[in-house]
Every structure is written in structure tokens, then in C-alpha cells.
Image (cartoon, rainbow, N blue to C red; front, side, top):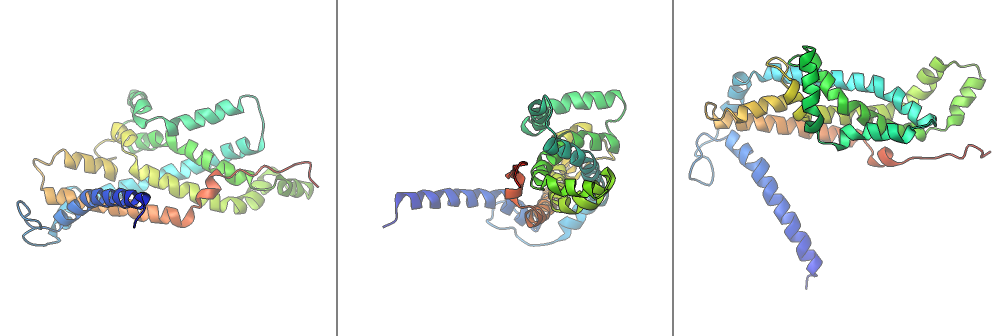
Amino acid sequence: MRRPGTWVTVLVFGFFFVNLAGVIGVPLVDSFGTRWFTTWLPEGWTTRWYGSAWREFSLGQVFWTTALVSVLVVAVSVVIGVPAAYALARRDFPGKRLVLLLFLLPILVPPITYGIPLATVLYKFHLAGTLTGVVLANLVPSVPFVVLTMTPFIEQIDPRIEAAARMCGAGTASVLLRILAPLLVPGILAASVLVLVRTVGMFELTFLTAGPDSQTLIVALYYAVFSAGIRTQQSIDAMAVMYTLSMLVLLVIALRFVNPTQLVTRVKEDRNAC
């Protein structure tokens, strides 16, 4: 006889998979169907909707813009976030907890709450509607994300390694580039992949600041859905499938390179230990 907890688990997973089949399965099937109205399955199968979506929505340009925005956001976030994380990990100063709280706010607060004022400022300086404006908007949550991701990695590195290098005559630049940088490669890679996934999936900030030539894939998908009256539904579903597959690939890459325990573990060394 099955325990009550087993039935609850079966029901929960069954409900999850039914919803997953509805959210992913229906657009996937429709993107390959010719006509699908009153039958359980489409009347025929075809792949032409993917080519139609690629041409109709200019997905080549959209994918290029998405990749360019993501790479720029990742690069700038790492350049700014890693030194900031080093300062937070190695220095104690008044107001440090307040600084950490400020870094947490853009991650914890829904993007729409600060996205509208941010977009207003960018429009005032004629940056909204451009690629630069989209990158700047996405940096607001991305830089704190890198800081909070890298801080535990830096804290796990024994400060005595840096002290030994300095005693041997290494300058600050040499310590950072030749000692710390190789040790921080896993953390930088983890932060970069997570920021990449977050940027590709960021809708609110990109939607508020993007123009016709600076739309990422998720914003283009939004406009396609709301123009469904004049667009072929199968083409929109094909576009949705391509977006889902791209996010799935990014998530698989993220899980390949990111160890979740490293993102939360903070190692505090006893500096008085021998």
C-alpha cells in the first residue's frame, strides 16, 4: 500500500508535467503543423513555419542584437563587478552592510519598479532606443549579480597567498593578474554565464529601453505575440520554440560550469592561525 506522501508526490509531479506539456508541447506541435483546429493533432506536418518566422521577424538581426547586447553586458559587468567584489571580500569599512544591501536591491526588487524611472533618464539623455541604452539598462541588475556571485569565490582564496606574493616583491597589478586572476577563472566564468542567461531572458528593462534596431529576442517575441491578428500563429509558435531552445542551451551551459555551492559558501579564515 502506498503512503499518502507518495500519492501527493505523484500528483504534484503529474500536475507539473501536464502544465509543462501545455506550455511547451502545444507551441512545439503547432510550429510543425499545417492546420490545427478541431482535431487532437494537426492535419499535416511541415517545417516551413521556421523559415517563414526567420524571414518575417528578421530573426537573423534579432539574434545578432541579442548576442551583442549579452556579450557587452557580460564584459562590462565583469570588468566593474570583480574589483568591487574583491573590495567587499577583502576590506572591512563603515557602511559595508549598507553597500551589500544596495547591491541586493536591483536583484530582489522587480525590474519594472526601477525600470520606468531608469528608462525616463535614458530617454532624457537620448540613450533609450539605442543599443547603448539597452546595455546600460541591463547593467543595473547585472553588475550587482556579478559582485554577489564573485564575493564568495574571492573569500575562499587564502589572503596569505597574496601576502606571500607581495613579500616576494610582486606589485598590485602582478598580484591581480598573475596570482588572483587564474584562481578566479571558475568564478568569473560562472558569473559570466549566469549574467548571460539573465540578460537574454530580461524582458522588462530591455522592453522599456529598446528601439526598432535594438530589440532582443524576448522583446521581438512579445511584439510578435501581440500582433497575432496579422501574423501566422504557427510562425509565432516557431519563434517561441527557437527562443525556448536558446534559453535551454544557455541553462545547460550554466549548469555545466556553475557549482551552486560555490555561490553561497563563504569561507572565513582565521588570520591568526599559524
